[in-house]
Length: 295
Ligand code: PMP
Image 1 (tube, rainbow, N blue to C red):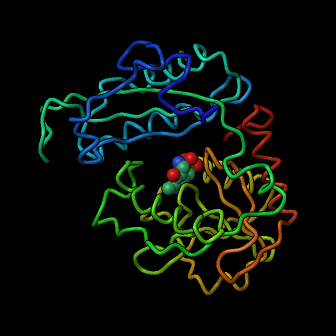
Image 2: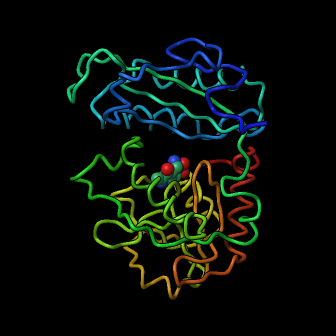
Image 3: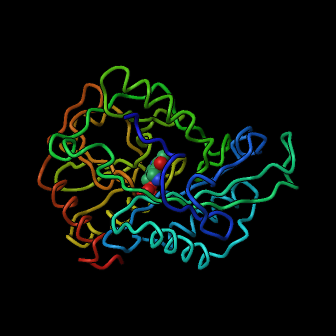
């Protein structure tokens, strides 16, 4: 049996206001988004039938579209409800969800003022993003060959498809050399983030994380910062240079898909999967399952 592809499945996808059979949620090749990357998306997870931080994800989707100069023709509350309807139609309690908005096929060429805006939401089962083993061992990361662009060269605060071009290239470069993922520096050479997750370091009982001025200020990142502060752990947001990794004891990634995943090494620098990381993994797991307040 071949691998199950993403276009050939049973179930339903929410598309422009209605749940349609999974295989019918298609777009034409002359779609602006396909040619010019005019799409923005979200990644969110449901736990025990509840979508974690749903309002924040829907709000970010709207803001991401705004940054690309288009308006999603649905309100935040409508997108929330569409996500819940998609999850309900799937029959899944634990799922990964992918809302995406894009410019349609009414116009070809760089300009797209007349292209209609579409919104789709799909969900499926997805276990640990980096696999279960990484949660014990920690990930092996290489330093990416590509750098996060400056905010004046791309809409870096948007979760826009185009910004992932260098993430896929970096992820493939890492995989080809036996690494799990890549740590991306920014255009200045400062530590930025992994290809689909933010990064934290532990030093002397405090958390250090780069200031998100040219990459996504992740929803998981902010949740984990609150969880740490609630335990009296100091969180320091600052510029981090790669050479500083020599002095860091622990490291982990955060993301809606990645959740909290420990990192064992980045290039030549090694980290232990330590107590503070394990504590925050457990706290995040409790938080998303409704065992702790998110505020
Ligand atoms: N950076 C990138 C490039 C990502 O793709 C993600 C995942 N959305 C994150 C950071 C983490 O963001 P969040 O915690 O909001 O999922």
